[in-house]
Length: 441
Image 1: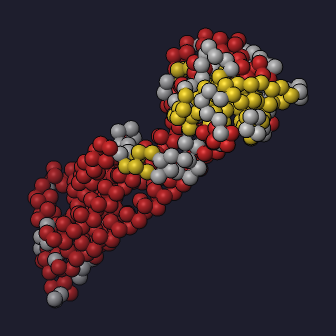
Image 2 (image 1 turned 135 degrees about the vertical axis):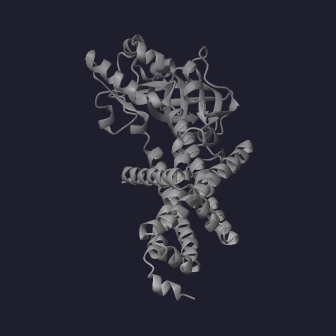
Image 3 (image 1 turned 180 degrees about the vertical axis):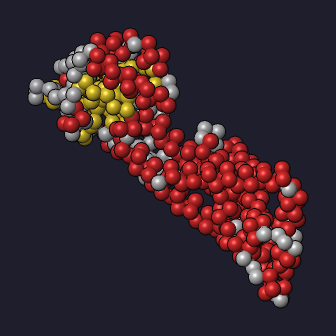
């Protein structure tokens, strides 16, 4: 549906610009008369332009805010141990338990070498890493406190890339040379009353069903801003997690790319390599796994559509009212033009032209003023409260330099609505009965 509306709007825009261009070439005086008629009542025209401009600016600013929110949420989703592409053992996703140790990748090192041997994947990839997900009970026996945790074994050298948005609020991140050092989510740390340099105990069930335990020292406490994640997350060096669970497997292999736009191209190549080498693996992109991201996007798109609809209706009525008043006040003038031999089509085109011109002026003012307001906002950003499920707020910005669709819509809104609003007044003007129009008071 959106694609149909997009193409209809494009057709109307091209048609409008063609009318203006043809008029400039064949009858440039009509353009001059259009400007004179539009600004015959300057106050009315000014109010109409202000309404159009404010509507266009509102759509531009809110659209830029939504684009930035999508971008920030996407990057946070990708860099919170999700990555751009994840590779699993076949049946892992269908199993329904993301921390099951029954569907693990047994040949992590050879698979990683195969991926890095491909020139295209190696060029597009920032890092490839394995992770081992598990769960268990974490305790601080000195204080008699225990809680459930969701652990993830991470290669320490890649933790800064995949956990780039996790802020260390105490201590430091995982160490490659201290295998018994771990980091806790802020919620786990608070429940255990454990902080930097404290010793805690982990109890897990290994793939064979036996119980294993170990003591570890807290190296740091991190906060991702996602409450549910921080309340259960524990990060452990991958080698330590494998030793604890008595396995050399990993739950998944994560690819973090240089550019998110290349995700589908790299994903197709990864799947081709899996098929060529007959590997019992399956690959999925981040947007297949990020359910929460799509829920937020759908919510914001619905809100944005509602705002665009309301603004469009207001602009249509404002322009339609201005042009209809012009028709009423110029009834005798229109009758005189018709009596001189001008056709109905010509009279109707004059009023269509007035709508197009006011739409073009509104589009230019909307984009120009919108850019100025966006630049002012982007100097320091706008402090926003925490989103649902998050524990910290963020600075909102207006993103206008990554998506030309925002410029397109900010221009299309005034122009298309002005064209639609001018249809009824132009038909009324063209269909005036000459004799009755001369008697109009």
